[in-house]
Image (cartoon, rainbow, N blue to C red; front, side, top):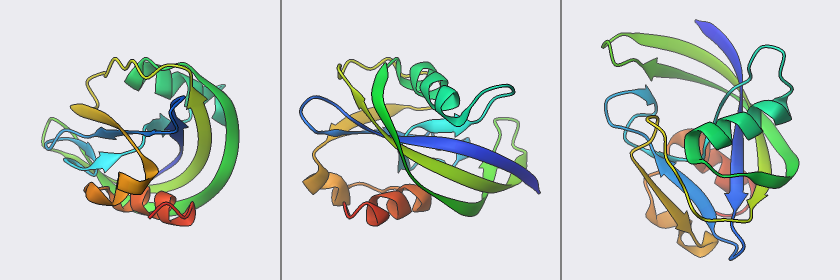
Length: 140
């Protein structure tokens, strides 16, 4: 089992919509499901620095007004393109943030994205971690 601390961001655009992205069906954590963006804390980075870096890398968005929300722990499996898998014990730090733009440039970690009104979040197949986040925020 590999232990990691990761950051996730609930990002809103100027219209109040929330950014979500879909993982490819063949790799990553929770393949083929919708999620909020984020990733691991890098060496010599604070959690907030890691969040900014991960969001920029994965989405091309610049985020502001970053605020910590809560954290939780999670056990899951990460699937690699080489058809190997890795068991993970994650400590997940969840933040809220704003983006002044809704123009997205996805990287290879996601295959689709959407900006969703909070009232429509229940219409998507979210991974268990993202469901937990939105439930804790009172959005699901």
